[in-house]
Image (cartoon, rainbow, N blue to C red; front, side, top):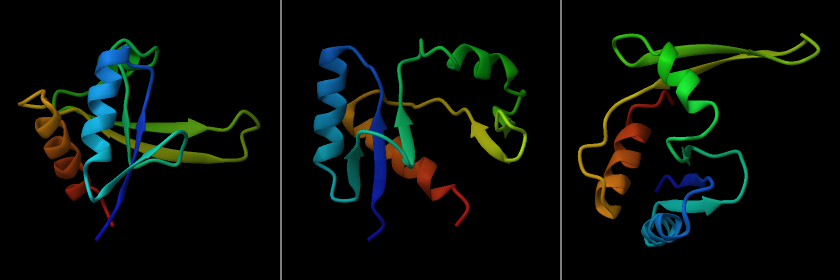
Amino acid sequence: MTRYRIFVGELPRMMRAIVEDAVSGQPDMDLVERGPADVAIVPETARALPTVEALLRGDGRLRVLALSADGRRARILHISARPVPTVSPLGLMDAIRAAMADRPH
C-alpha cells in the first residue's frame, strides 16, 4: 500500500485538530512536520497562495520554474486547482486520494 506524507501548515487550532485527527486515522497517510510531503494542507490566507491563485490559468493549472538563489539549480513545479466538493474530514481525505491518483509516477 502506498503511504502519503501529509504536512499540515498553520491552521487555526480546532481546524488543525480535526485535520490531524482525520489524517492520523487513515491507513495510507502519515503526518509529517516538515518536507518532503506529498500533500500540504495550508490556510487559504498563506502568503504565497493569493499570488499562485492570481496566476492560475483558466483551466486551473500553473507551472512554476523555481530557481535557486545562486542560479545553479532549477525545478518545475506543477500546480493545479480543483474545488473540493465536500469540506468534511471524509471529503478532505477523498480529495487527497483523488489528487494523489492524478500524480505522475
